[in-house]
Length: 329
Image 1 (cartoon, rainbow, N blue to C red):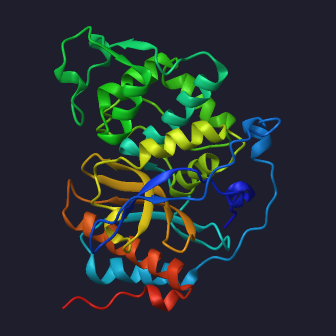
Image 2: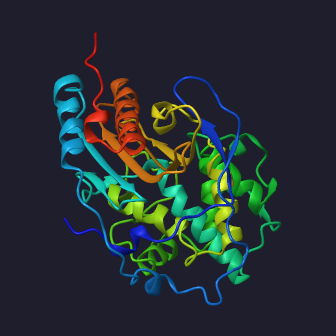
């Protein structure tokens, strides 16, 4: 399969991630400092996608193990889409990586990045006040809708709630401030994303906002590079993403001392998570996984946890066989 070359560019640092693990909560870990020197010229999104860097190999053994896991233990799940990229080696894992799926709240990551682009362009201020009007108030996750209509919140507070508690009303306020769904989709196209599309305001329970596992990882790669956003904006975004309260999915499969900045998504028939992971030794990888199942099937969460654990074990030990989980008792 074709992997876009820019996925392997330089790593982001300078952000304190929340360490997580399957054993016990660990203290916060600091990643290597981001250079505070902004590049002399921040390349345009299209230029950033033209950076040709070598890619690694497809992790077929690990892919087969994951597909076998679903066939043998998770027959109730309808379909899985996943893409993982080892940033040290360029090796990647793709299971239906180019298939288009509803993104649920994972679409909020590129929305957040678009917001910070607007801040850098000077068209939006983080201390600017946004008014919660009736047209943006939405059900589902979040608590802003419980406040009186006409309440005001800063852009930064609104954006933080959009990610940390996945507030749909906050998301709609940001979308509206940035010009609407069509404007944002066009911006995604300028970043080189061909499938990532924002069709409707949240909560989008029908699943019309879409992307692919590979493009969700591409979005993380754009965040991981110093070309789309300045180091300061990238650090602020990742600081927000490390505070996501839902830790049931990718974080639950990581080892002690691992760090993750991520965003989950859940609209019942689609459950997913996407994020940047760092192991205690400093190895990094990008992750995106979506599971399609009958509405809110409980096994979807457990499957994502197991896949997360398998990929983490592979990255830590560098051996696909190390990723293999023991059979269920």
